[in-house]
Image 1 (cartoon, rainbow, N blue to C red):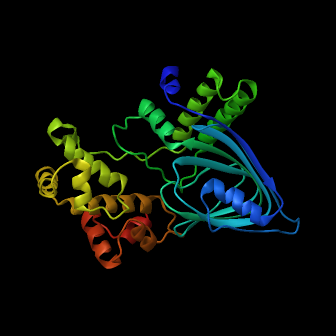
Image 2: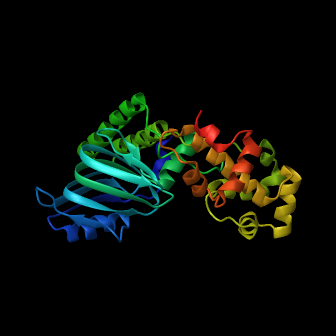
Image 3: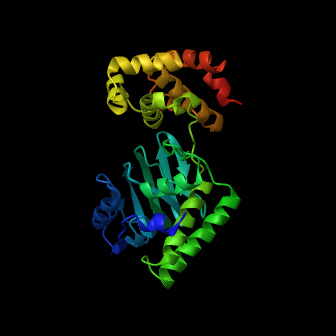
Length: 323
């Protein structure tokens, strides 16, 4: 990526510190950073204290969060990708029923598109915050994305080689900040490198859209299809697709029939089934729950879901999970 590409984006330097020794102040300060309005904190055997430092800019920032005592609460979706790793202490995440206990020095990508809860105690944690638009621009330069959104598996654990590359990238970030600051060419180069390594450490799922959508005559239909892929877990309506595509409701329905021989909502159900299939293949059969995954992707009636799944994949969900 050229330096001009990065320099064209308006950015602001970011540097601040929060610290204190009162649980209520920690909820106010740390909850304020992350939009948490229902957090709870308490002291432990060693009392209570916290310190949170941030340095970088509005595209990438390096952070350290330290706390003696305990804190927990919900995390809401944000416009940033956040990678965190513990150097000591304990943090557990509850991702819609999937419990993830962070392990020392193993980076975790926090969910960005759905609310989850966390519980942490006596910890020292390092974090890197990436502005979502910045990562998407870097991804567009290095991945064959087209207009497709980035999707990540937040339960995936990065491979050791990628973690080693990440540590090198973080060292580059901190050195650039100390030696030259966030307005320097060294910092711009270091943060671009860190974003590339982030995409290697947590490879995004890229939906392979049908080639027919590349035809100019299908440009508006493509917009509707991309919207479905980006919001498959949500309550997508034909009226919503109509607005996104700039077509009448009838034209949207006719376009899906012409190209895919299904209705828009049937196409949505197929995408959801594909997402469930992906997750079940990746889950540990000892801890995975078909019902939790199905409900996460909008299937409320598990009997009908199971029948549709078997029709699409030639096996029932539990069979996929046991592979």
